[in-house]
Length: 405
Image (cartoon, rainbow, N blue to C red; front, side):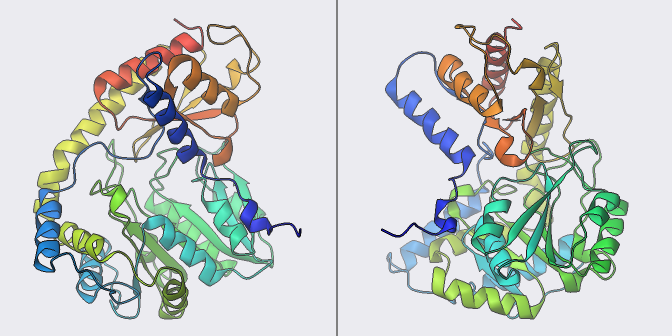
């Protein structure tokens, strides 16, 4: 039998695998309750209009939901165009320059497939969201990792310039970042954009965490910068701001030639995003700024408070390096000093962060994300989008596993 293609051998998402393992342990009913600090999912509800208007739509159609336009219903694309213009000042044609996708992840993957030919290089600053390199691989491209562990988890012009190569085609930028919560300033993005233009790179700007900011950090959308609209694909969705992860609606905005290719690809891959989910996204994105902030504001304040709570408790653990995120809802901790040392009740050492994460789950029933798959070996990602009691207890169990308590 012939071997399967390399693209079919890509490993599954490590965060989803960890979440699945945590659920299996929880379902077994053995030991302490599982506390999950691993999955990137808000714990607050979506706006109430989402359920109300979507239920009314399904009832009106008597459950008969038919195919929609492949790149999304017109009213949703128009609403996205209006929301992006209000948020960033950038104007997109809702018919030619916007596509509705099956979640933000599908939009990013479609962007890569439309831009990358076999042998092309895709630049990915690390730490990165773990799905970026596989996207490059299944497009036939080569993911080129730019290590940014020593520059505050952010790409610099010098590092981008050092990675210059004739086959470079695209650059991922994610601000605020998953997994680090790092937020690029406008000045940093202007400088990176100028260097990207010199190298004639496309920028894929993942802006899914754009509303989740702390300590006065300000969001800058790359296509709003001088000369960047024509070489940037803006990817966003309703998963994080609106807490609608399971609805699976994202969108991409960008120049017509790329969007045309993405629409063609999507027509053969999904036919169209789910009709009911598009109505749900329409309900969410139709909220005025005042309505949105009336709903989101208290939850943002809760995230700010939980961030402070997590940093307070993690800061009490000697030897544990802790980053302070300016956005998103993750904290990165450096566990490299603990690798190879006695850990857990057994006292058996672990060789890397992935083994540590699985041992932590098995021993203490706490799920975290190991960051080797994110390009940051020796680090863990903890989500603070969980109830206060779970956050404090999860960190206490981590401390016990590390033999710090």
